[in-house]
Image (cartoon, rainbow, N blue to C red):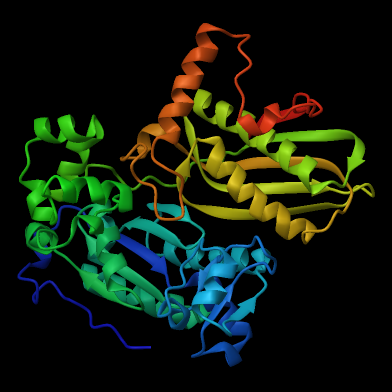
Length: 422
C-alpha cells in the first residue's frame, strides 16, 4: 500500500497558532477486511471482501484491490462477484469487529475525552485542549496513526481541520492510510476546487440537481446566496452553502447513552415460509419507521433477531449508507440480514424482530431526503412517509400500510407484541 505524505501547516501556508479549534476525523481503512487480514494474512494483496454467503447478501467491506474492480460496500454480493470474478469472500465476524472497534476507540480516548463515535470504524475528536501536551495537529494525527497501528495492527486515515465537515472531507480524500492537515486560513483554498460531490452529504441525487443548476465545484456553490439555495433545495440549501464555505458550528459531542428502538413479533405457530416471514418483516419495518419519526430519530444501523423453537436467538446487524427513518431502507436491510440468519432456507421461526440502532436526532442530518447514495432508495420516500404520518394524525383509524401488506386473502399479521426503546 502506498504511504501517504502528511501535509503540514507550513506546507499549506498556515501556522500552528491560527487554530481556535482542532477537529480530527479518524476513519479506519476497509475496517472489516483489515481486521480479517490480521487473522488471514494470506488475503493480503488479493481482491477480497466481507459478506454473508447467499444470493441476497450485500458487501460489508471490500479490499482496495477489489475496489479497483468497482466493488463497493452495500453492493449486492452477486454484483460484486460479477465485477470481480474470483474475489475471495470472507464470512463476517461481528464480535471480532466490535472488539477491534473497542480497542481503537480506547486508544483515541487516551488522546482526548472529547470523542464522538460516528460508527464502528470512525470518530471525530476535538484535540484543541491536547495541543499544549501533544503538539501540533499534524503531530497529534501522526501519533494517533502510529498508536492505532502499533497496538491493533490496523491502518487508519486522519483528517485535521477547524470543523467537523471539513475534517471528514479531508480524511475521505486522504485515504487510504493517510494524514492531511488543513489549517483554518487555508480552508476555502482547499475546498473551492473540489467537486460538489466532495461535500459531506452530497450524494448522486443532490449532485445531479446541483450540476443541473450549473454548480459543479464547491466554489460555485459557496458563491450562491442563502436565499437562492433555499429556493432550490428548501431549508437545507442555506446549510449546504455554509458547509461549502467551510462554516460548520457543530461541536464534537461525546457519545450519549446509546439508544435503540425495537419492534418484535412472536408467532402463535412457528413460521417457515420465507414469503410469510417477508410479509411480517415489512410490517415490522413499517411500524418501526413510524415510531422513529414520531420520536424524532433516524437509524444508522439495523439489526434483525430470530428466535427458534428451542428458544435459541440469533442476531445480525448492518450499518446503513445514511441515517434513515423510512420503512423501505429498513426493510431492505432487514431482508438481507434475515437471509443471512436463515441461509435462505425454511427454518422454523418463533419470534422475529427488527431493531433500529445508532439513533440520531432527525435535525442532525443536514440533507433531509437528498443524501441518498447509489445503494439507497429514491429521495421522495421520506416526503411520502411524512404525508402518510399527517394523514394518520388527522384520521387515526386510517389503515395506511405498504402495498405488500394488503395482498388479497393474505392473513393479518396482527400488531407487534413488544416494542421498546432503550
